[in-house]
Image (cartoon, rainbow, N blue to C red):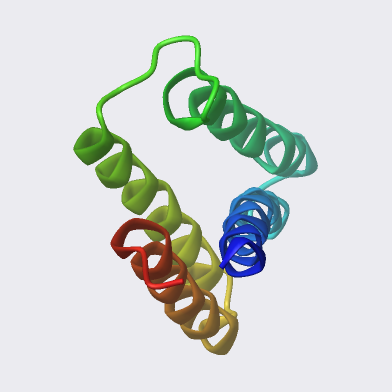
Length: 112
């Protein structure tokens, strides 16, 4: 049982890292100048990481109740999926979206 829980925690951490990578990929693949690509490619994941650490992380500075945390996580993961889709990686977006749904279900329903 403990192994399954830590596996779900590991999956969730990887989903978070993939969300940051998706935001960075989206930023660097904009059809804009190099300055805006650099700004969005580095700035967007940085802002998301700051937001995650402030409100969603287990040791957040401003912790929120569980239902609000779930909603915020879903928003971040949905935006990461959309960023992959709009960057031209629709297959990867679908795969990531499915993994996110499975991970969220396992994390919050005790499916492990």
